[in-house]
Structures are given as structure tokens and as C-alpha cells.
Image: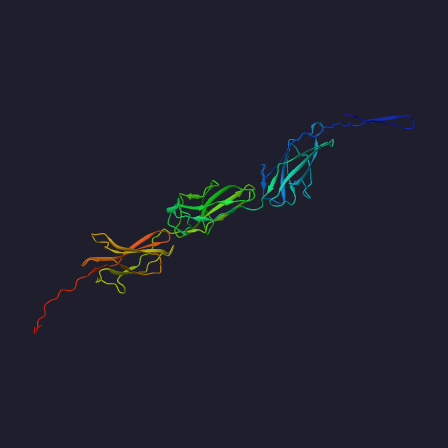
Length: 371
């Protein structure tokens, strides 16, 4: 440490003397510390979504006996060019400093922060952070398909209806992010109209099928499955399926008629019969298909079907059963099973008809008889 002494003389020969506090000679630069780019929680990051500011954490620098006065901060791009208007002087506030450096940063570009520690003796040390990449684009999604409870493990077909009270699931190829990549995924099932969450859970990034159990799915209520993705830059986005309606009730059955026109009690053709139906409906999920058959009636001791037809056209209301073999004197019924789009079934049958295949037996005719 160097001191300066000043002696003052007046014209009378008297003197006065003063000594400075001294100046400490310290040619050594500060010892290097740590410079990290962090998020708002002070955690080290490699990606961020903000294009207006980068947060820097400074610690570990040591100025020795002359101490550190300030830190000079500047942001550089991947070519080590200074980013305009990012230079900042930060006063030494203690062992750890967290400050935001404002500027305009481009999506998809990488940046570093250069920190120069300046001692009171004006010696300096510069440390550069690891790079941070700006990813301002949210994650994107592949389509989400609602699955039928009966085919959760195998199907990839999107459904619009479900009959389950407690089970749902979906299929998807997941989410993707071309910038920073996907960090986490969370799946949920929720009411579509009210956006209220029924159940959610984190899932592995590579899972294609997600199943929810223990739900309380309400009748005639629409739900949807949603996937929330967070990328490495902490941007979050959500995508949902088209949704599915829950239907717990079977279709309402109508009337089944034997014969091509009016309902018949007797039928005289051995290899053909026409079955008609009307009045079937399902107010929630609508009619999907009919399965029509001709065979034994419900109260018959014999149980058989001569022929069965699948009717996928829900507007169709009759079918003629050909290539059958009716037995003389046997009673038959036209039977209809109706399925709704939620997969529930109800069934009913006609009043039945008796097959009459033999000609009437001739009786006796008398001339002159008195009645």
C-alpha cells in the first residue's frame, strides 16, 4: 500500500502536514466465477421461449483484497457478434447476482452472455456462459383419436360415442417440437362443454395409447381427451380430440311386421318372407345398424334362425329373406336387433306367422241339399 504525504508552508515559516489514506496496488485480475443462463426459478437452461430478455446468474467471482466493483454484461450471437442494446453494467450486490438482460432475440438463434468482472483496481476477468437457444414456437400435435372402450388395446379408429360409465382412452402419435424438443406430456379427459377436468396424468413421451379408469362418465354428456405438451423452452400448448358422447341407454324398439304389406298371420310361400320394421329410434347416439332374422319365436321350444341380414342403412325399413325353407304348419317370427352408435343393443320380434304350404283338403258337395 502506498501513501502520499503533503507538507504546506506559509510565509511565516509555519508548516502543516497531511497523509492520504493510501492506495492499494493490486495488479491481479479477479478470479473466474460462474456465468449461467437461467429461468425465472434460477435453474440452468439451454432453451427459452422469450425473445425479449435473457436472465443471467453470476456467482463465484473473487476480487481479492481490492474487491469487485461492477460487472459488465453483453450478449453475443453464435458468430460472437454483439447483440445491439444489450450492454449492461451491474453493480456488485453480493455473492450471487441474478439479472435480466433485455434485447431483441430471434427465434431459432443461439446466444451467449459475456460477463466481465471489474475490480476497484480496474483489473478485469471475462467469463462466457453456455449457449441458450430461443424456441418461441409452441409444441405441435398429431391427431388424437377417441377409442371405443371395447378396443382400447388394438384400435386406431376414432369414435364419436361411448357406452362406458368409467372407462375411456385415446390413441395418438403424440406431440413434436422442431426447436427444442418435447420435455413432458400430460393427458386428460374432460367435459367438452364446460372444460372441466375429470382426470389427468403425466405420460411417457413415447406412449401411443392412454387409458383412464375409475371415471364417472355422465349419460348424454360429451367428453374429449386432451394432450398438453411442454417443450424444453418451457412453452406449453394443448390439443384435444373431436370428443365423444356418452350414451348409457339402449335404443327404443319399434314394431316388426311379417309380410310385404300388412301384417300377416299365415304365409303360403315356402322359400321367402318379407320383414318390415318402423318406429326404432335412439335420441342420444342415433341408430347404427339393424340385424334382421327370421326363425323361431321367443316363446318357442325350438330356437333357430333360418336367415340373418345385416342392415347398415338405417333409413331402410324392410328386407326380403330369400332361399329359406319354411315348414308347413310351423310358426315363425321376424326378429330385429337394433344397435346404436354407442354399441348398445335392444331387440324385439313380430307377432309371428304360420307357414301354410299345403292346399286345402276338398270337402263334400251335395246337390239338392236343404240348408
